[in-house]
Length: 232
Ligand SMILES: [Mg+2]
Image (cartoon, rainbow, N blue to C red; front, top):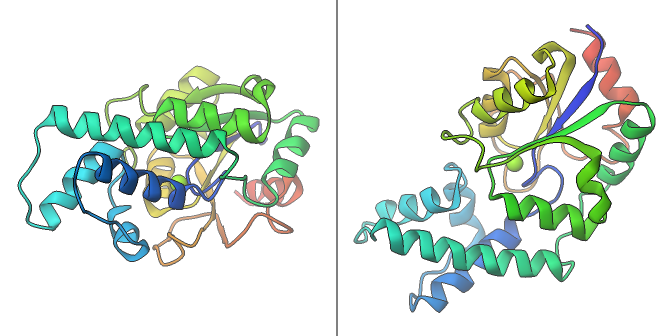
């Protein structure tokens, strides 16, 4: 089957966003009067859970703290998103080296581009606007984010949602992911996956990936992706 589309994860894949997320969580906690601090080691463990609200609950459970009601968690997460979006708008989160070239080459070659993430939609929009420019939102034929599905990654829902809207078979697409949860989500939707790990995910188990790299630059380009897809 011919490769027709690339489906991109966002956090950790398009950009090393995790530190900006982590710092935004800490700022929100302080604003809510808590002295909780998520350092890199703790955040690496908390990334096992996708979705910001679920991550806050997972942290409270793990630390043996009193569970907050859903409304408070939702408000805290809204506050975190506000700070995260501000970081994106200030240009503090660049794309990973090689990503812009890959996207540009893929467009020139006529490949369809789509986003398959379960992060908050405003996070995706703001990242794209502040890195590739506002027009880049139109480069992606379908943008599937956390508001499109009930079950976040590692559930396959967002990939199935994107495939349905693209009207493509899983075999005509490749997913680009950086984490074990993302890999599980894509492969559960039968989409073969190329992993480019980031510092927060380098220790993950990537069994089942079509290929695993530690960066895009010089390794992941349209030619290498087409060759990998051809081996299927
Ligand atoms: Mg990711």
